[in-house]
Amino acid sequence: MSTIITSPINVLAISGGIGGAKLALGLDRILAEDKLAVLCNTGDDFEHLGLHISPDVDTVMYTLAGIANPETGWGREGETWSFMRSLEALGGETWFQLGDKDLAIHVERTRRLRHGEALTSIVADFALRLGVQARLLPMSDQPVRTMVKTDEGTLPFQRYFVERRCVPSVQGFSFDGVDEAHPPDGLTQLLQSNHLEAIIICPSNPFVSIDPILAVPGMREALSASPVPVVAVSPIIGGKAVKGPTAKMMIELGMPTTSKAVAEHYHGLLSGFVLDESDADQVKSFDLPCLVTPTLMNSEADKRRLASEVLDFARDLAT
Ligand code: FO1
Image (tube, rainbow, N blue to C red; front, side, top):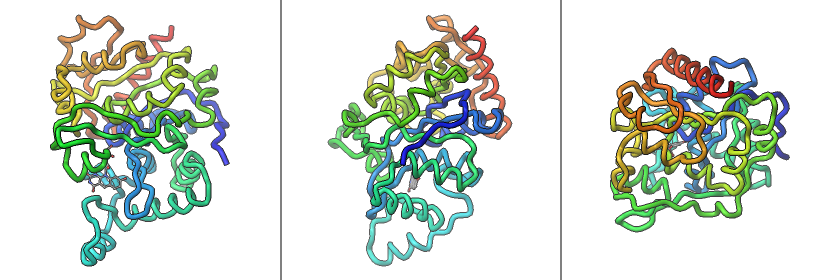
């Protein structure tokens, strides 16, 4: 079974996990029902305890469903941890925390994948059942695994990110399996649709959240061929990442920790760029249109306001 995009989508957001999900939530809440699609990174996916874990897709899904854990940003609110405690007592692996409620999604996804159902179809069904109105599109049905080249050797993404807490120094990234991957069914039609108004690259980590998506063969070309503006929102504010290792990675890769460097990283893809007011002095060095506005999203009101400003900016670029 494949995902069929039935109703006209106005906005495509491209997102990783926690940071991207905040803007996706803002977009979801300001757009009419069924007008948002979110293309999610699956490079973070991995097999753990015999289960298929899909962290960024689940983070976006839980966030839009209003059931995400507000403290961690990942996993579910009101979580209990009996499974992890019982696993620990048996000497099992506990470096990656799976809450009791969250466990259900991994078990059911794994069961359905083993029965041959495509990830896009499973995600569409879960989203419907959890009351998510946006279309959630995993970047590919084929497995892609982000590998992090570090001074301690090459580590699978979650080993680097969760187990090693991003301590090893990063030297580069690769995306295992990406050569065999394809964009999800219906994405090309969505990108060419007359109803589409904007493509928004959320303030996610450019290297491990957005690059795996862009690395899917045909993805970058399909995005570039779309007639609508592509606008990226910077994940860097005042030289620092709001959350996560983006700034640390930029330093280790020999890049300045600036919004300008993020925009240059997306070279050739963007029609416009959104950066925080604390980085306003960088704007004069940009050779593409910029929107300068507060980009920190703490409250739902912040998320809605930023989403609305980003959309207005993209609509202005289109005219
Ligand atoms: N992140 C952590 O830092 N520690 C965890 O134990 C952890 C468990 C986890 C379980 C399910 C899930 O969907 C996400 C989880 N994450 C955890 C978050 C996640 O692995 C990362 O934030 C993303 O992969 C990066 O976007």
